[in-house]
Length: 300
Ligand SMILES: NC(=O)c1ccc[n+]([C@@H]2O[C@H](COP(=O)([O-])OP(=O)(O)OC[C@H]3O[C@@H](n4cnc5c(N)ncnc54)[C@H](OP(=O)(O)O)[C@@H]3O)[C@@H](O)[C@H]2O)c1
Picture 1 (cartoon, rainbow, N blue to C red):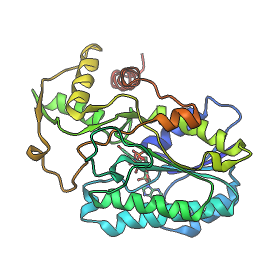
Picture 2: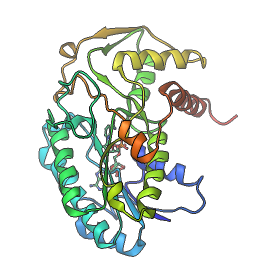
Picture 3: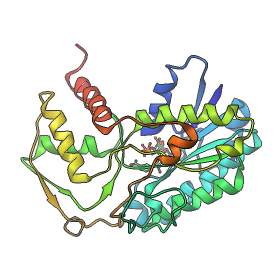
């Protein structure tokens, strides 16, 4: 099976490349800037025409949540118009598209986990641009899976785990928000799930069975503060530095973009339609910390 991935070095794109090496029948092509740019629809179109994919996976996005507030044009150009360009090119190639989206399409007022049919109401530019991207993808390609994920971390890229480990090296204690609830999701777990989804939709006699929105998130909900404590506990057990975590409120840590107080995602549909179950956070975080601390120590 031939899979084309937009982006190459993002957390999910890089994890997809790694996961695909374990599946010998997969041929994975990557579209990276500047050759393949979501801002240039023709570059996307010709990359897909040349590669002839069975499935297209699009994790590429404008992901700077706070910067988006001052750069709305850039966010919409990539997350809405770029997403539309990828979905259109996939449709022209006769391929289904799996498009990554976000928990930030919700306003966070619900007091339990969000399901796919819940009303969306993004609070910031990033969330709005991703929501418009979802709608553009749905309109451009009937064979689409919109996979909403959340709180991504990986042994590489910009993420909360790496930020906490860096801060532990610089400070004696850290202050972390304790009133936002979400589901940390490990990029390598997302990648394995996306490859399984790609096989399902590519091989389905009835692709409509798999088309639509699905939540693809880790099974454990927590606050950023809880997550920081889990990270430091895991780091300490591997000989790394742990620092005390002081819980603070969102109001004490103002950011340009508002974030949902609750963005827990229910994965009941992921389980029932795709039979996919992501591993518990403790196992995925352990893998992430093993890889990070191994790379810090260097090859043995
Ligand atoms: N990170 C999270 O916590 C989070 C949470 C929920 C949902 N999501 C969604 O999940 C997906 C994957 O996130 P991630 O964390 O893997 O993102 P990431 O690490 O920030 O990577 C984003 C990738 O998009 C590429 N990109 C940006 N603009 C592009 C353009 N104009 N043309 C081509 N490529 C472009 C970047 O390429 P360069 O390497 O060239 O910059 C980068 O490789 C995104 O759709 C994101 O919205 C993320």
